[in-house]
Length: 424
Image 1 (cartoon, rainbow, N blue to C red):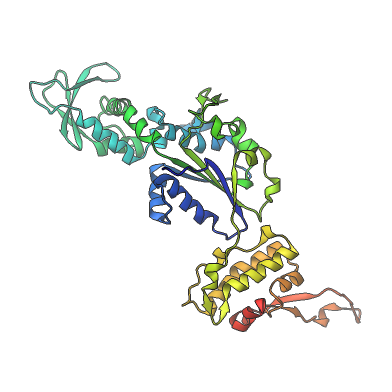
Image 2 (tube, rainbow, N blue to C red):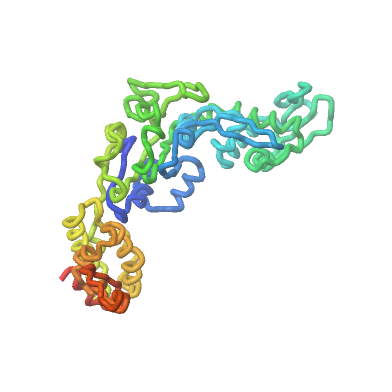
């Protein structure tokens, strides 16, 4: 029995709780049927176009996500064309939509084209004087020419009024499409490319609509959802997808194309709750996504022991104090410490605190050092700084101030007992 997965989900939680790590596992599980941490496989699916990874930010808009008008300059001439965005491209790919030649570079991979080419060549006859090959016409003067199978990696081209066949390889056609190579034989190459795409389209489409596709949106809460999704926010609902009972298609504003979201496209978002509370999320988005909370985990950290410091207990105590002084959305994730092993020494732990944990606490508490001291259990990392009275004298009188200055005692990071003080 096949496991079913949520089409739309958002992994949310404080920083360092493994959201991006979990996205990789979820994406591979949806595609392959079982969870895996294999980054090389993930990268392979990204290169194939089966997984698309994007990041939302304040300037990200509908034009980058769905479609927009882009300017193109050539020889001081400016032209404008409609360009598909990341979401529209992966939807078309998942749906196996036929693509014009100018979009092949964006939609197909080189491996995809190579497979189409091999299927195409298999159907061609071997060259002989007694057989006619597949007949095509040159684009300008409509002169017929024949195609024959030379070998698995090349095609023989025979003009109708010539007995001298020419040869074109798969590698050359790939250079034409993906590397902007100039046509060596402009009367033949573009015609052959278009015919390969046309003839092999159905098998290409069948191959793609039977696969699951993943769109990963990192930092989904940092974008303006209404601006980015526009009218398509309704189309991502499972009941409104292509093939569903309540299927909906809309006319896109620039291209005027009819557009729908296929049911084999999964959308996974990540959200850092320290950046923006889930309560402030766009309500339209909240209704259409399943939210999966990811909080700090301590079990694996409890197994790490450095100089008798229990890393799990230490982080748990820090987080309990943060939750009391601030909120649970700003706790610190276990991923910050997962690089530590039992063989690690105190210098590695000190580096994590100096370069990651302390700056994070400064950001959370707006440099309120008194609260940061409380979070760390007044363990000696932060001390009151003595006043230099010479700086506070004017006209022979000392200026009185109740302001307390603090300084970081970096040498204290080298002492194991100072970490133990956090939780004991």
